[in-house]
Image (cartoon, rainbow, N blue to C red; front, side, top):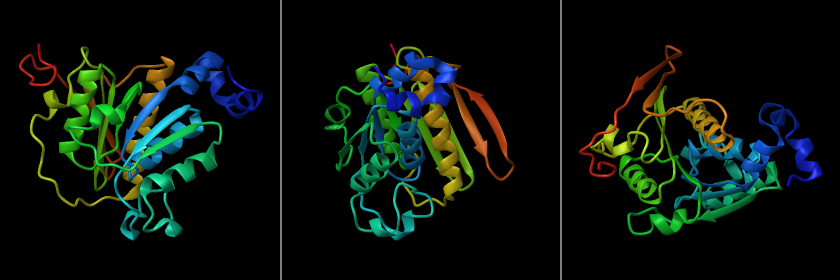
Length: 240
C-alpha cells in the first residue's frame, strides 16, 4: 500500500493510472545495466516515478569526460564508483525507494545471478557484446528487455518481450566493433527517457509498447521513424 507521503508525491501521475498503477511501480524490481549516459536519465525518471526497487550494475568509475552526459554524477564524484554516486543521487531524489548497486562487469557467466529476481532488464550499455549477453538472459529468464543505443545526435530504442517479439539477436545478429563514439548528452537523455516511458507503460499496463519495431531518432532533423522488426525462426537465441 502507498503511504500518505507517497500519495502526495505521486498525486499528478495517479491521475493517469490510479493508485493501483502506482502500487505496481512501487512493487516492481528493475535491473539497469549501466550507470552512464543512458542509465542516468533512465534511473532518474524511474526513481522519481516511484519504481520501488532499482538495481544498477556498472564496473566503472566516474571520469571528467563522462560529465557531458552522465547526469547522475558531478565534479565531486570523479574517481568514485559510478554505482555509489548513482545510489546517492537517486536516494536524494526519492528516499522512499530501494536502490541496490553492483560494481561488477556483466558477463555471460554472471548475468543471471546479477539480474536475480528482477522483473525486467534495461539496456543502458555502450557496446553490443554486453547487449547480446543481456538479450540472452532476458530470453532465458522470460522477462522483458528494454534496448536503447545512441551515437552523436542519433538514437534508437525497442522493447523486447520473450516469446512475443523479435529479440535483439533477430534484429542485430552481429555486434559492430566496439569503438569510442561521439555523443552529446541531450541524445542520451532523449533515448533514455523513451526507455523509461516504455518501462513505466509496461509495469502499469498503459498504452502501446515498442514491440516488433525500432524507434529511430534523428536529432539533427528532429525526425522520428519507426521500423518494423520480425522474429527470425532460425534465431540462435529465441528461435524455435
